[in-house]
Image (cartoon, rainbow, N blue to C red):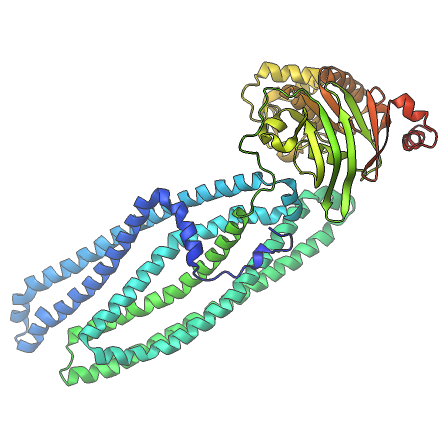
Length: 601
């Protein structure tokens, strides 16, 4: 998916056979109920038309006999049984139709919701499998809209779209056949209203396509603004920009309201127009039908049948216009979702990926160049090696490419040139889960999920017992934090760990790393937000954690990496200096010496 491709501006055809076929693939596991729903719809059409025919027979039969004989009450008494039977048949048909509608609604809703459940899970898993480049190009608000709103729109087409279209078209075809059979001349007269209906429907389709596309664009923009404002609420409050954020939200909300109002205006004009044309059809029917009855070319029952069938004829046309709106929105949603699903993950595990029981921890960057954006390399021609069990620190100014090393090592990104090797094998040869399972990164910005502390430490690994988790907290210096929490490991953590301080979140991140027992540990400013007393505890814990493990420490504060076996100094994405702390400090005019002087003088 190109960064420039806006999925909110897809054409959204009212009916796209290619998309419908693909959508029906999600219905296939529930095809029995789906086919049953179509069968029920067919039965409903047949029952509706049969009830109209029974009404004609009732009027032209016993009721007409009463009128023609002129015998009044006695003739009515004689026909009473036949009339009662006819009325009971019509009543029974209506009751059966109501029961079938309930059954059809249950089946279609079950199919729709189960199919959309499967689709939501697939879309979520597909998004989770994407590399970080994908999220760099796609706003979170848009992805949330894809999973939540677009799947709901597709549920509408399965519930009220395909069945409704089949019902309405089947109904229209049968009605025309019946009307032509009863009186083809009267049918052709009434059909004079079809050209205005077609013209009005075409105008409505064209206008609604533009209007609903505008609504989708405004919904996506509002969702992105809302997501961004909530995530950045602390920054907004610190800088006192709540009013500006509110004004921006109000402006986009107003634009969304105006877009919705345009759709309301179209409906307000279209449906009264449809009613006007339908009324014209009734007038033509009564005028011509009355003359036909006078000329004995038509019976009262047949005219009544015509009137009822014409009502049934115009109703599907009105329904098809509403269904068109549902289909248009659903086809646009389907197109966006399938465009998303068609994005092939750039980073995938090879079919025969390496799955070693445990990594040894040898790391090598061999002439690696990588850029987040074309033409702006984050690292270029980077080469260095780390021996198993060695602790290597990476320092440098912001933007020097330090954190990029962690992303390339864990294969969150692939190098544009060169190779990243772990245990003498290119990381692209490893099974992703196996590679990332052997390397733990403790980031500067710790993310905690909503749930318990235990859930956040375990990260889905059921092999980790509570005793191991408590031992990991003890080793990370987080045991005092557990004691302060009201329920210890069972304490609920709010979204993103907002109920904990930054330092507390970092302590839990260290405990999480210890619990995973990785072969390679990457500490990305892992102690940057703890106080001096806590930092001393963490440093002691890190010394324990680093024993027997390859450790890469990414740091700004030089005080935290003096004991590293080796220090790599990055500058503008390149390795400029390396050595021990003592060697680098004594290097006159060196970058490290300059950094040291800035921090300690």
